Length: 252
Image (tube, rainbow, N blue to C red; front, side, top):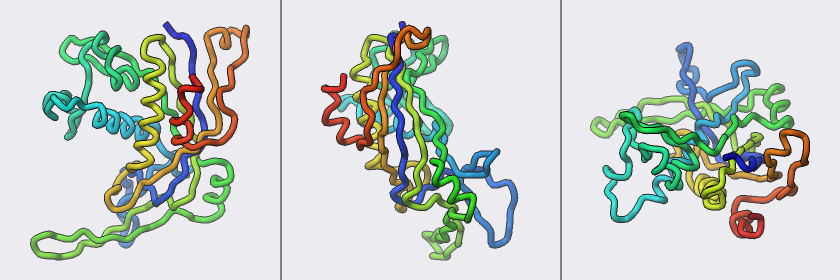
């Protein structure tokens, strides 16, 4: 049963260059080898919600792995070239901090558990939209891959969103009774772990460090959607994730 929705909104700020890749449509001599993903209407860079959700889930999976389980036991589902942790039935997922929050898909006659969290695509804030429209602010970073045998260098040019650019973000959490407090704590944990990790590609080479700046948190119960009640404001000032983690027990 849905009790309420918790809406978390704010900004994502790039601390280092950010590269979330997109397939290249044409090949140009001396051009960009790996472009960033862009909105098809505006042509401006954005951060897909799938990139945020996938990375946050990955970090929570690693942090929650029991010490007495092997990687083969814990990361039990193959997806492409990777393996992830997925509970195979709704009952198991409802008691799993990962699958309850991020969802699971049953395999071989298993049952699904819908994700409780929604991560929207993040678009440039208005001030940065105007800057990008006036001048080309995306970086073209030239690197070289080194052949470990011959030491031959192969140059390549990577497109990046530069540091200090800000994107709007919105996260919606569906409070469905059991485990809600733990879910919220884990959601903020994931955001903090992501700040200390990287988003997108080439993180080991310095790309993808970001910072979350949370502007507001509000609760909307089911009566809000029938017009009988207003929303409850939990936070209406800018705070970092670390500050919120320290005070989360006072907020909920």
